[in-house]
Image (tube, rainbow, N blue to C red; front, side):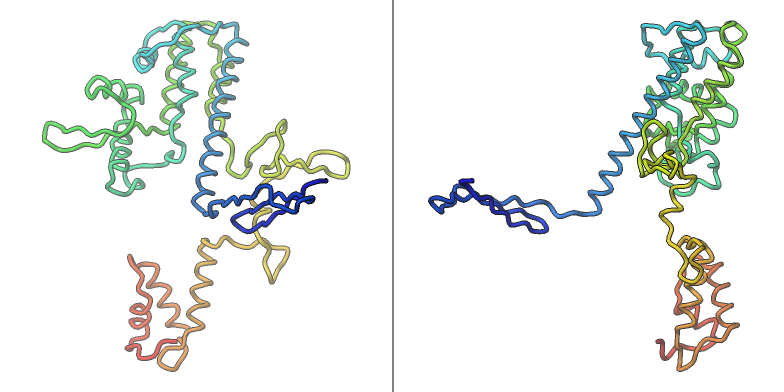
Length: 333
């Protein structure tokens, strides 16, 4: 052991030096400084991880579709088409080949639409941004058209259908267009395509159509977390923990283990901080602790304050309290 390695470890740096024991000289020394940790880095890491998982799950869907296609005695075509939208529109009402059908069914699994807008309508989609306006235009158009028909029309008139774009109508009004389509709209289109093509191809059985829709609809529940029975992780419901019988432990809901216990009733889970009851409790607790003009609030005043907050567009607590008390606030503690 001719050399000594010396380390100086800090919270954001590591200094090190190599010392020759015989000559008692420093052979080499340096300091590595690391960037300070921040919440933004955590967000970036989560987004990257989410992207990787999304790609893996899409690949699994496509692989399962290929297996289903082969299982029904069908061969996978060795060509691609850049006219998928036109094929989809044709498949709604006319016969297309099985090779062409494979291409559009494959495309549906790659681009399934947006699930968080399933219940969106003109009233629920708020805002005046280009994105919100585009959603409203799509919701109106989807009332009597399939997604591929809308996309084909935009492809012919605008030159593209993906992304955000703006057009000016005959009245000079600017219209925002978006390709954000719901999963349910695509599902309705797929069901129409399969219904039509079953009339021309015997191999498209009811069982095949049902199995394809199952693959298309497949989506991991938010409370399941990552992983599965073959690829276990303690971050999801399929844990790596073993019970007393040597079997893996599967949890029903991964979020229950993240929720704290009540300090008064330890057997009960805590309510979510954003729940109405928790918000109301915190408000009443704050009102109980107030001393205004040398006195505490009366019960009827607290009831009036809570009711006023429910119907207010903006909340100015000092003004609301003064109005409900019926007096000017001189001292507020």
